Image (cartoon, rainbow over all chains, first blue to last red; front, side):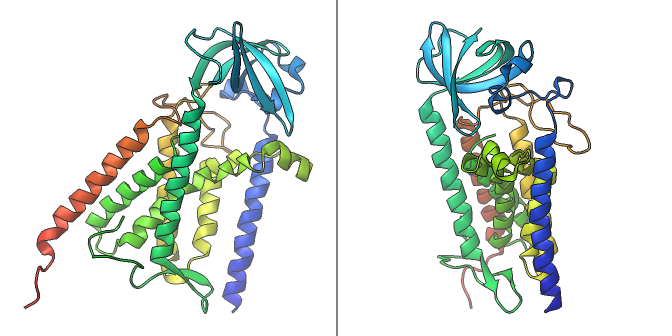
Length: 168
Length: 170
């Protein structure tokens, strides 16, 4: 049906336009006046251009005296960055994020830091996966594909419905 | 930005609250808001196909983060709504957008390393908004609070509806 062809074309165009917007957004330079700062993917390969500027970096703490974090950047780069101005109770193995002034190629004086244990990050990913699975399950319970109209529609009755009251 | 379970629970609470107000708002529609609440975090595909990798593949700058902005999320919601058959399409679009908006609003309250969140109004302006600074994305409290809201909404809905349900057929 012609209207379905239009829908498919429109769908592909929207996805394509998202790619275009992603390229456009990726092209915008960083601007402290707009509260936008470079992260390690941007400054790590050409740190000289950022010395004296505020940047952000995050990684795993490998030493506490002085505070040093090990972090990845770009596709396969890794580096060690010394961070000053960090509170004293952060321990080795924790994840540290810092925002501050780059004073040397791999040296930052932090104005703001946040830290967390690696298990907290793992918890975050695990519980996020649970959230996604819950939503996906609900989608399969409540919606179905209408092949003749080439689209998705709500089911007449939800699948695996024990009683009318439960909807979790 | 909290974990996705917190976003799903907030979407559930919102949808359940709406289902109290509107007769037609069945669990299927609650699911649509919840799905919308997942949309902005589709930018996390960058964990598998990083920005630098995409830039190498396309030979152009690239930032998945645009999906987390209102403009990127709105476009994805439109794409999602196109997959729905005509009678339901507009409603799905509206609810997906509502869910995505709830996600963006909740993320705005998080701690960001620089103290500023996203340029929500891009491409109108590149201004990054000050972040709410209330919680880290790995904190457990957001999930507890949104679970509380979800339970409250569920309880209220079932208490409100209970007197109208026939308990026996005669």
